[in-house]
Image (cartoon, rainbow, N blue to C red; front, side, top):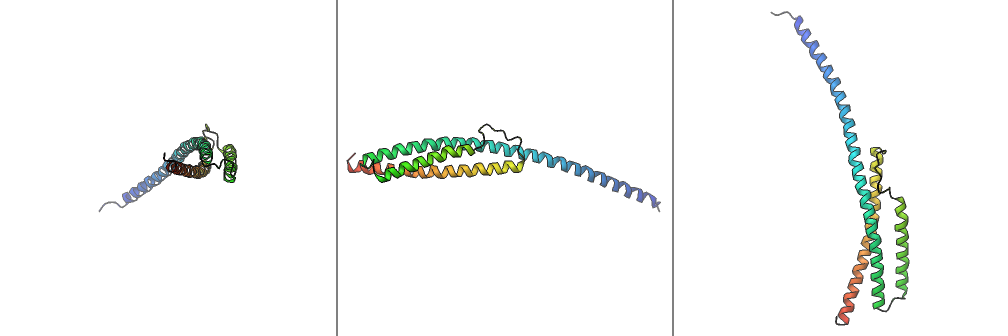
Length: 165
């Protein structure tokens, strides 16, 4: 039978290898965690930059949409003989209110060319959520004006039908 001492040496070597691999695994885990956080930050920064650019684009589009809707409503009201009506005055007040909102809310936007490198991932996530909230409010405003333009278009069709055009 073989000498039983060699088995203890094999066990000690296996234990040492296990400890070394555990330490190496821990170090690699930390390095991977840091890399993943850097990549997450980069992804969030890129997504936030894109969202900010989309926010400014939507803001410009909605400003133009409000102007178009105002001209459309003025034309329809003139065609129906209600240019000086109370509903037109209310419309004008709402237009002014919405234009003031659009001008004021722009001050709350992040800078269009910001790079956000100084922000932590949690701050990037918060900024991204805020930008999406602002976009959603702009989308709601755009939806309201698109439906008003659709009403104006329907009124135009009715006018054409009545006048044989």
